[in-house]
Image (cartoon, one colour):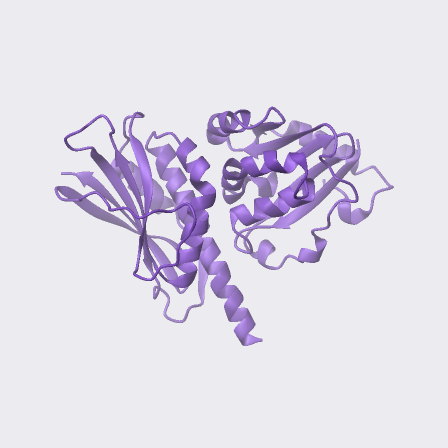
Amino acid sequence: MTVAVRTNVTAYATTHVATNMLRGLKQIIQGCGLDPNLLMTQWAVLEKGVATWLASGHLQALVLEIFDPSDRVDDRRGRFDFTIDYGYYTDGDGELWLDPRAVRQAILKAGSYPSACGYRFVADTAPGAPRVDGWSDTTLRSTAGMARRTVGTAIGGGSMGASLAYYTRS
Amino acid sequence: MTVLARRIASIPRRTSVETWHVISELLAPAGTPARTTLDAATGPAAMLIAEEVTGAAPIILSGGGPQLRIYTLHGEAAMEADLDQELGFPFVPTAGDWALSLPASPEDLEAVGAALAAISPRLSVRDSTDDDGVAVASRRSASIPTINTVELEQP
């Protein structure tokens, strides 16, 4: 019976963290003045990938890259990272919680972007991550010349914590 | 107006997309024409479920039969929910003419409305904070004595 309960706790924590990272991304996209339509159209694929890789322990970070497609020299405009710590709670009994203030603070600090900016989602996964339909391999844009700032842990559950950081061009 | 309600366990029991699939199965079983429309609405619907607006304001399906109201359960309520209470309807709710209304917070109305309009005129969004129509219907349904109390809309 204990095993069954533990299984449920782990599964619930995975779902909680996965879905709330997507909620956080939505809050960031809207708060920064970007069009949420892309997020809506990709929601199912995003949630499937993030939940799968959280459950398998391969998801290291979920990244939102913001870029200006009209800039052919340096299109980078901003970036937000949810970074996963699988040992945030050592006993694995962490309650399911969400701190929307951390997301609001990141939005406030990062500022807004022109509505013409585009964005994409990148899952940074460890080697051996299972394939998920709708996702393809890519490489993150360089962060050279950008400053990274962490606002703290935004989501927790089970043994996991997801901290939020943002990048600005320095 | 006869009103039937269901409460569907959502996050963290199910992901937002899994929750929408359960709701879609209740309203339009696989293979029915309406299911294609509901499947196409997965992104915006799942996003609203994740935002938990469907916990307080129902997804409303109106058609030839009773009005159906689907709520989602979140957090501990979802974890403790009895999935056997997620009963199907003894009819196909989308068999005839039908329309589905999703609740959204004011900041999501425009984007979700545009997304749904591009899918089907049967789909619409309404302000979840301005649900006078639902409240009026709830009071009416509470006086209907012939419906199983499990299915009654709670005022």
